[in-house]
Amino acid sequence: MTTLSATTSDSSGLVGWVLDLMERLGEVGVAVAVFAETFLPPIPSEAVLPVAGYLAYEGRMDPWLATAWATAGSVVGAWVWWAVGRALGRHRTRALVERVPLLHGTDFDRAESYFDRHGPLAVLLGRCIPLVRSFVSIPAGIAHMPFLQFTVYTTVGSLVWNGLWIGLGYGLGPAMEPLLTRFSGVLSNVVVVLVVLALAWFVVRRVRARGRATTDA
Image (tube, rainbow, N blue to C red; front, side, top):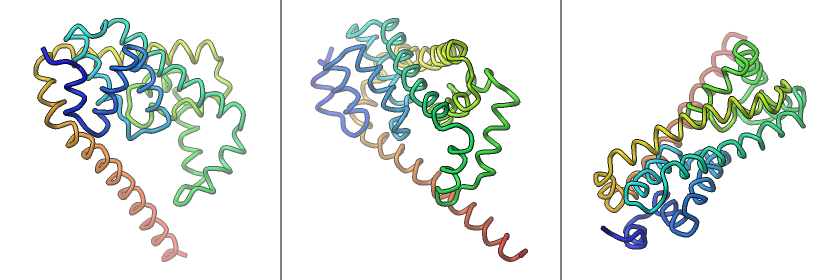
């Protein structure tokens, strides 16, 4: 069995940072990493949580505690965005969206409409969708979704998501170690590339839409 320090020294990028965090803080480190993902989407829980499962397989942390702490990190991060949405309200949030380059007030209107249609279900399912997971709390806060109800749905959705990914890392067991020691840097670069491609696709769509609108005018 390799030591966590040895594995960390062979890893780089996001995975290496997560390993180092877990070495220092244990299960609490899982919560810190998941909380950070709430504000830094390029730190994906899909990379963080299987690492926790692998460490649980190695006996370096308890899988149930890791899942509980990961869920706590998710919930606390969601509380922050819920509070932001509640504090700003609909009009100020919409005004901020309109000031963001390539965003329109209609983007906010669509998100608000989706939440109005699905309500608590949007919060529950949103916890299992990358990127949406970080920001679904804002329309919930704007709509003044009761804090207790919001917390319950967020906890259930986060618990399912975190449990699945930690369980995957635990189930893979020894197969995880080569990924951590050999491909952690590659995985980190892939995450960055995917984020850049997604942003580029979004920008191109918006620029083309503006071009068509100008032509039609």
